[in-house]
Length: 237
Image 1 (tube, rainbow, N blue to C red):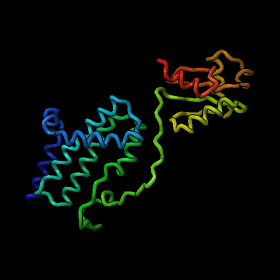
Image 2: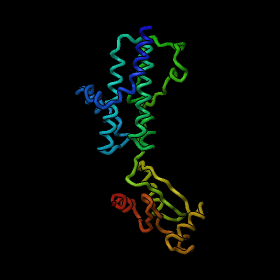
Image 3: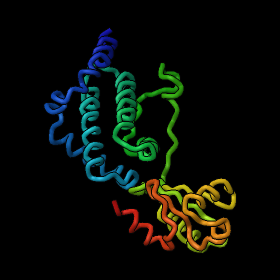
Image 4: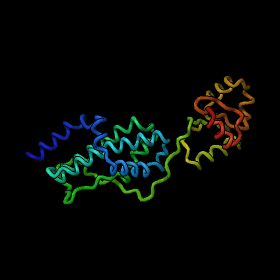
């Protein structure tokens, strides 16, 4: 009964725990440092800007307060603590949707089990009352591949056969692990026709492209021949 009451009181307190005043009182120096260290572990995978990293760190700190409240409650059984810690982690993940872009959030979801694992309680057995999904052992990933790099502007490369500059730029984007979209104009004649009309190019000119047509944040470029030129344009407002 005591455990069930404590569990219920915690769940009822979740909305209250979101108050900024509460967090200002509870986020001490140790939690701030721990949140900073956790954020640093995510950074190689998420590649966040300064402002976004600070918001990410603040969110981590808020949920560390909740996590500490559960861990320090001696009235809770190990199994109940485990259930609550999983709930806190799930809530944190859902809040991160508003902090991270979709592709960063997906990467965050992928690496979170390794960076912020939830240790199973001692004596944990498969026939405990936890759901099958909660009991499922997470696969171990000893070597995480490098994170995809989100560019400052969305990149779409329109390529054609026999275009060496197209192949070179696409290869360097792949080597840099950039997030981008590649469209073959030879396989998409309608797109090719529309681009030709937009750029005032004849069908013959569109059939003999020596450089890619590149969209950076929705703006088209048809004179870029190298990866470095594209990156220079990327940095312009």
